[in-house]
Image (cartoon, rainbow, N blue to C red):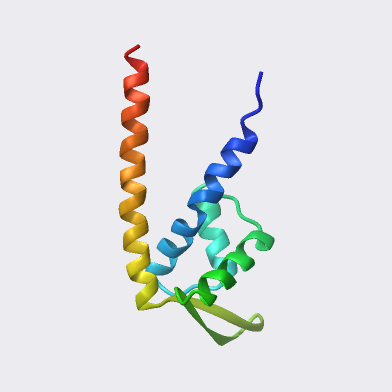
Amino acid sequence: MVNSDNTKAQMRKGVLELCILSILLQGDAYPTQIIDKLKDTKLVVVEGTLYPLLTRLKNTGLLTYRWEESNSGPPRKYYKLTEIGEQYLKELQLSWQELVDAVNKTIESGKQL
């Protein structure tokens, strides 16, 4: 039997950017909060995956950040969507919906065979 773990991991990786931007649309968040929200939806992400992605999104102008003091440790870096990031997210959401619709149609037509 073929192991599907790699395929599942690649699918999750492909939608991670959309999920992170969607989380930040709800409000500013620091990386641990983002990881926790992703875990709540069964998208388990480690810091080693998240931080480079956040940096890339910031460098492309989709995110900005600010430092905020913490009561329980060092200051935290809170990420926020920029206006460009919000527009980009709308485009991603539309593309995602088109992809989901196309995949669902393909799966449904395959069941009729």
